Amino acid sequence: MGRMQDTRPPKHPWWHWRGEWARTVAVLLLLGVFRASFANHYVVPSGSMEPTLEPGDRVLVDMRAHGWRIPLTTWHLTRGQPAQRGEVVIFDSPSDGVRLIKRVVAVGGDMVEVRDGHLRINGRWLSDGHGSAEQFGAHAATLDLDDGGGPDVAPMRIPQGQLLMMGDHRGNSLDGRFFGLVPEGKVYGRATAVFWRSGQAFTWKPL
Image 1 (cartoon, helix red, strand yellow):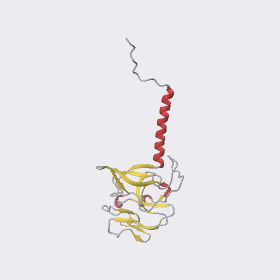
Image 2 (spheres, helix red, strand yellow):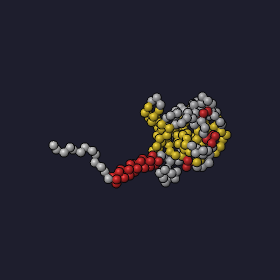
Image 3 (cartoon, rainbow, N blue to C red):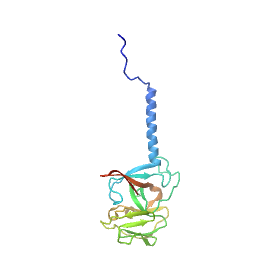
Image 4 (cartoon, rainbow, N blue to C red):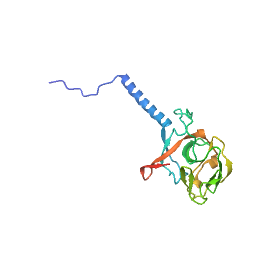
């Protein structure tokens, strides 16, 4: 009788497995760097941005929009484009550091007023004072005023390098009217689109 063929997988030396682990770690690090430097996603935690964003929405975040960061840090390598009125951005709250998603409604140099949930920027109301939409140049916001407009803001000048953030659900948004202005350097990235929504699964809704 011939010898039975050994079907067991070949044994690899210990350095083979060390190489496999090194490659796996390298891939994970590259993925982390990509997410920290290029694109990431954010899960909307509340209804403060309704109807634009719903709780549970998954939002694609452009990490390059407002400057390149050193991966896994908050240090910027390049400045990037300044935040624009009407953009939806991710940022760290100046009160407790929690990462939030809101709309930039006023930038450095703007004279801003909020009355009954409506914005007046540099002497011009962004809506007629009764409608549910505001126009920020190229960006438009549909408001939810079912819970009222939230706190008013007396006319004030935004200092350079600071931003006023507000939610589109004006009466149900813990935003800059409560925690104050946000330094531009605290902006983590620009929200570009909703790519997943409960009940619809994968979708694509540009912001």
